[in-house]
Image 1 (cartoon, rainbow, N blue to C red):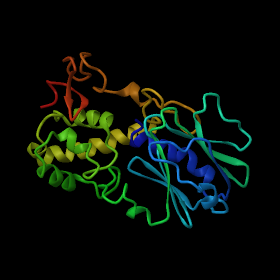
Image 2 (image 1 turned 45 degrees about the horizontal axis):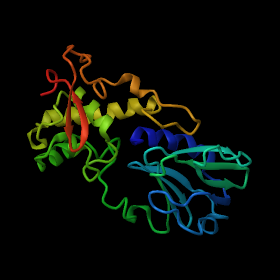
Image 3 (image 1 turned 135 degrees about the vertical axis):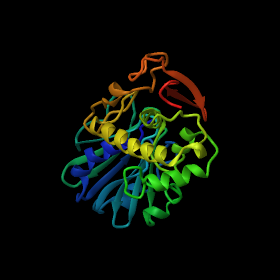
Image 4 (image 1 turned 30 degrees about the horizontal axis):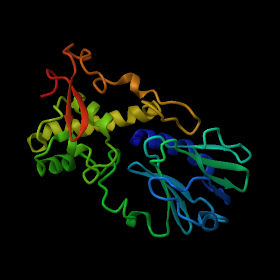
Length: 273
């Protein structure tokens, strides 16, 4: 599933092409995604101009004067900008097009159909999917003091807490594994046992790992491509994720694997305690 760096990469790819442009048509070929595409989306969007695009957690928000189009890429979704006369690809996976008056088009493709394209007429922060989210990990309000206080309230595994969007958004499985490695913290350690200096190091490494991943265009494990159709390259820099039994890049100890919260966790038994 695309995580924060992949969604941010998509945002940066599409925003310059569609901000300030007016919608001329919307074509929905397949409304049955994880949640149904709202009926009448063509009538809702036609004539409206894109004010701006932004990201909240793993959601893309396209803001219009009357509301927002909220997009989640699911397991295999992608957004790309084409000329409006570009035919859908074979395979019937190009589910939705937003066509602009200048001849550009934003196309949503999703082979597995686990994504969402929704319309919401209210303020973005009041949408039920967004209302209870924690801070953005790259924002100033996600700092060492905040993270330490949040961890002290929880007895569950620290990795599970990092992946709780009520605590901090967008730190998915890959980037939680990598951040914990660089901070020297075992993923199964109880969150309340993480000390203040450790929380500070973890906060700093979360920001660094995510920034590096964004710079590399995110990670491509299966389906992810950016708005130009390119794969991400951060997976070439993984220290522990997916490296079960391979040598730790620091000490050479074989990387261990453990299931935490139904997700595979990778760590160095020697470097992470």
